[in-house]
Length: 296
Image 1: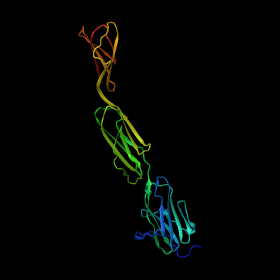
Image 2 (image 1 turned 90 degrees about the vertical axis):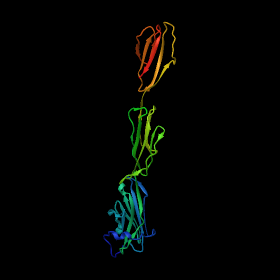
Image 3 (image 1 turned 45 degrees about the vertical axis):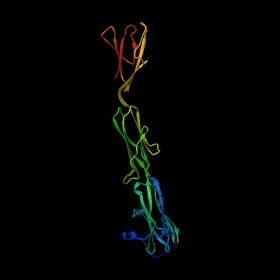
């Protein structure tokens, strides 16, 4: 049989009641999931046992009453996000958030009011809503760089919550990321990292990755440098040919982009030279002289 005495139809928690002592756990207990992801559901449980029948339970978020969380046990009232079970002096109130958002982070507790208008205050629990990480934003050279220039590579990313570590590397050189920063009114941390280095001849690849995940961004750049070496094949400084026979010599010029090679021949019997282009030079089988190779 339901208690037929005085009932409280509408109860609002006043500022003065913020100082109500916390009731011992065996009288009024409150529990929630310790953490959940954005979009997940979360359930809040308020279990009350007192010497008088309870009437209403008020769920609080950051000391503000959640208006949809008043769970009266009269006639077993329930809805899609509120339910109450129990009898006598022991009741179990449950409030559900079906899809969590960042704004649901914070501290929760419950209040229970009995027939004598006595207010019972539960312990407080914290809900941390976790956010997923995102694809890094890598800033690195995308075109050819000049040898010995100084370049800076940087990366920024949402590293989620709890924060994963941002990894920024150029070849085997890796940056130490800055401490993660939690964004205001968001469930995520962001983190940045940067590297400053001198351009060498080696083709470089910059990689930025969040933790051990597949969330990464890459960028490769080539290096431009002038001709810094010329090599003849065969590597000799003097050739001797039998008149009428043919011979060739190759020239390898090192640089990026690939250098253009030019041969100039100065015959012994003439003051006029002749030019030819290309890597391979066919030697004059009938005329002695000097061959000069240039790469640019």
